[in-house]
Image (cartoon, rainbow, N blue to C red; front, side):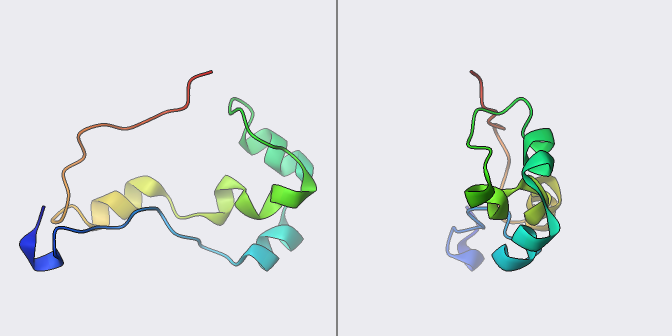
Length: 78
């Protein structure tokens, strides 16, 4: 790791909108489409976790490229 950042970096992408805004903006149908090949809950109680409520992970990792080296990219397999 980079000692200037205490060998630390972002642990997630972070949100682009609040949970409240995501609940107002997206529907269960949006959640179903966005997570079509992902094993997860697809109901109104988790709309705030829709992928579009989060920053693009590739952009986040590119922004901290001086802090980290991406070795693996994980993907859910069912």
